Figure 1 (cartoon, rainbow, N blue to C red):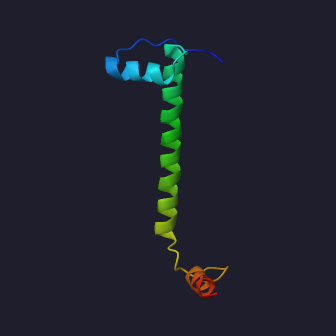
Figure 2 (cartoon, helix red, strand yellow):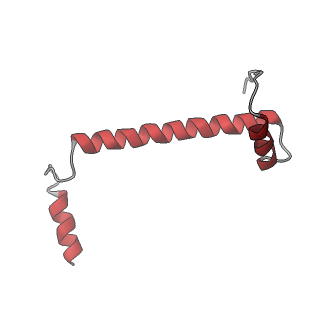
Figure 3 (cartoon, rainbow, N blue to C red):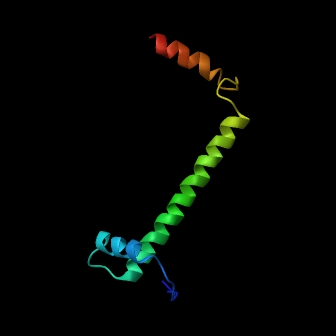
Length: 79
């Protein structure tokens, strides 16, 4: 995998805490882990937003070809 060199300044305490959390690894590994976590969080947020949009556009109590989900859930809860 190709690598990109970065040079930046970060909060010293934040970097020290990250280094302790990832003891035995390089600063580059710490930064890569942080970037992966950032992208994972961003993707999870995109998925959550898509679900929110879908539920707004198609409320649960809207009957469809499969039936009425609320009525089904009410009946299932009674059993």
